Image 1: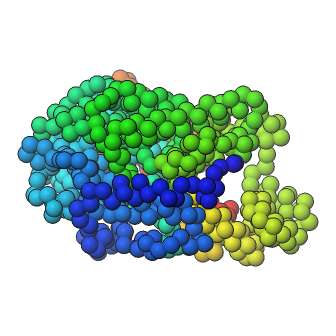
Image 2: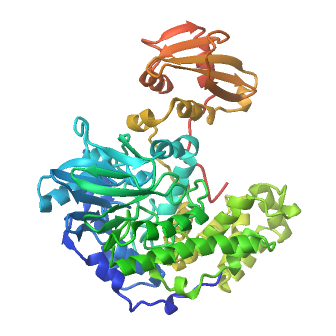
Image 3: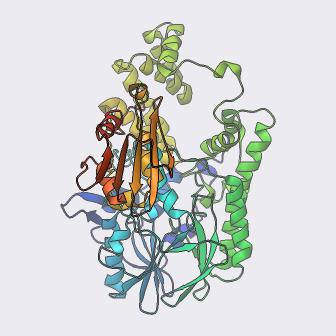
Length: 608
């Protein structure tokens, strides 16, 4: 992939630094957030080393981005609108109303959100929260909700979100949560030391906090572009942007404050079409079109634009320029990938040849700090053509271990393969050295020399990467090659997240964890009668598959449980059937749970 090298970038342009510092009011000192029991869940002071010059262990462009993202404190965006930045991966925005303050995007963790709100109140007074807005359905924009609206508060306060928010906010945790959590460790570099040769940024922000994730369901849905709401005397006009950076997302303006919120649709980096942690592939085509619509729809109603990450952009002309370039960025990625795949190129081939127009290459906000040209192009290819590249040799290849064993044999054995890999690394071909070393490690995970050599190659690849998530992935892989597989603490017990799941999603959470081979010989039907939802759900375990549907049938089930949704959550948590009406054979429930496995997000990624 050809791209502008760091030496060609406009490092003498310090506009971003001026904007990142503009409106500074005060910082949290120390910038450390703890849980009630003293556990540190956020430490922005750990990034103090970024005040120094870029070392040879980091890409200068990523170092610059990290310096910008590490800025922390309360900032004035415009009169009556403030942001707290640097206290989580995302920003919290606060809009002052007639009697209190509206909170936009309460970060990931309740503890960080509470600290951010306290910092705001320290400088702006004890304003009560009079509204809460979620820009979109990712956890770093709703998880801290209880930090600004604790239990017992917030009755009748509007909670505003785009249509479909709740379904999408919880669905990832149901279907692929453990695997995504495991990959997120690599993507954000959670296990790496914060140091010049370790984790320095994730590009979109510094890293993710690790506190208490909460969720307050929305009470006001935004269902159409042009919808206007008034919260605490503040007029807000919305633009729905589904299928862009998130399945449910929206931009909105404060016309009386002449300010525009761009959610996460236009930030100061190239974003992901498909994140390295995994997700449904996003639609770069529609993303571009909604950015174009925003330019026209919001017209001349703003003098500043801010987003859910990074720092604002002031001046309408500068905002339009940024939106236009972001629009062109996603359109160009989409259209040129399609042009080249229709010429017969595969995803990796397109990524290798792809180059952005020079004007976009040198636009700091279009640099690949979080998404990259390479993996975004492959994602667009995947969206249209899937995993198969059309080459028959790739249709039924051996799995990684068996393939690796054959490659090592072909290379003349592990010692010969290792010598050749070291030669490629010495010649600067780190990419093929990593490929060859990966085969050696998969063929023999106990080969300590190969593991250490591969870790050293990953060190070099990571330290040279401009993309924050690539750096974190490479360096975390090197760490695990040296120290073994890390553990992920996956909390599946959050009651608010669980209550936000539909009954169908709760049953799906069981179905995707049924151990099929163990369940091959099981065959039975269980009915769940939900009295609070006035619904009946029929579960059918047959041929190792647990299927379900809403049903009106009142016969044919071996077991019928009549209960409420909270009681169902208790049953799924193993709390038994006390207080639940049972008709039929309760042993069927035990037989079902006997073939359900618990998610394990501690599986290996860099070795078998």
